[in-house]
Image 1 (cartoon, helix red, strand yellow):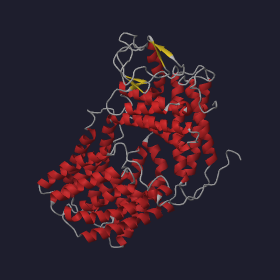
Image 2 (image 1 turned 120 degrees about the vertical axis):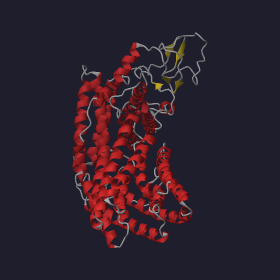
Image 3 (image 1 turned 180 degrees about the horizontal axis):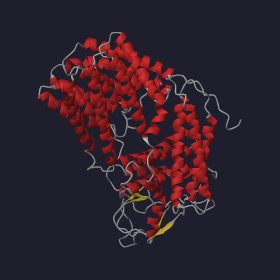
Length: 623
């Protein structure tokens, strides 16, 4: 069969049990959980002492911004948090003004649906999240149905802005203690993913899933490291060298050392010194002489940072002071280094400097492909709100927010989110019924219950969305009691009905407005991979290619491979579209990985074929 022949997409059965399966918690689940408690608690307690707990929903709108940007370097996080707060204030202002100008529920639902669509599109285009647009939509939709006057709007916005400023401080608080914490975590995840793929390859398995995950983790690490474009630092450069080592492991998985990759990942946790990787072009020479002793391939003779040789037995090979060894790598220390080491590290990182100089794509070009998703959101949210109103609901924004929370990259993922949302909300209303007697003991009890739900939601949602929704549901219901206690039965009944309406109507809208551009995006992604592969292959074959050009071509090709896999996965879950060229996708990925391996060897990051090194196995093909 020709490689260009499209294979009809297999009809997928919508998962139910699989959608509810629990995953592993995030490595940093406690960070957003503690941040939201620290951001919500003080403003709410202050309003409680002032006897104005009815104003807490407005401060909570700003406080919830502390949930964002925990994966960004702090310099980038400062900007992202500021933009999130401004976006929240913009949506809140539109909602408050609309609520003050009209009490027509149909008009308010329409405004809420349009806001939800804009928030969804902008968050997806800028990759803000988690929790992406859902928090912003909840804030704006809920305030649409709170009676307002125009004179009250400035004061309510001021409260939200003050709480948002406090949330910004909470989000930036760890910076003095761990200034490179997000970059370290992203690099560690890339190293661990590369190690997992290397272990799979050594076991003789295909490992397509592990390979895609590893490339995605490496790509995410580069995105994190490059988020601060004009602020290079010694620590960040050291982390970039480790990501290069992860890329080398992906190019030659059978020859990579998973234990070393994992030891590097462990070493960069916390605030310790960054491992200094050795020159990969010299690691395959077997025994090497070091000082007056011998050094095995890539292994430091010191054990646990202690040199067993007698004092004065030989100089440090890099001319530096004492160094601690972790997994065959040295930890950076102050002191002179050989010119050859500096030149090799410069060659490895020239592509990073080149990418920093490239301006990001304009927002308008990123919004274009998201038009179907925006239309889905607007239509689904509006219809859900209208149906809820037709059923006599007092809070149609619950159905609107439920619909807004469903929309994912494709229909299959949207279905999974609908199942998770319904199950989580149904269990959540039971939890609310159990917690209500405690929350109604007094204002302090109510605030403490809200804080507990905030913490629980962020602690659990990383394992599965439905588990986090178990805490989100009572949180949303408790917030409605801040102005005054309400009948529990009515709240529970309204929440269940609006959840079912929002999930059903929202999913029907997703099926009706399918993303027919998904197939064309796959074709464009295939073309981009082919062009990037040909460009990298030409440079690898040209003996006059500069290190900067080779590195930039390799990084560009790796990015297009990651984008192709994400685009193909998203398109595979869509309905009502032409058959996808699955075979072409697989062949393009395989060819790209072979070219990446050849480019890595051409850069000298792996010994060339025919040398005496055992570290010569790549994916077995030239570009």
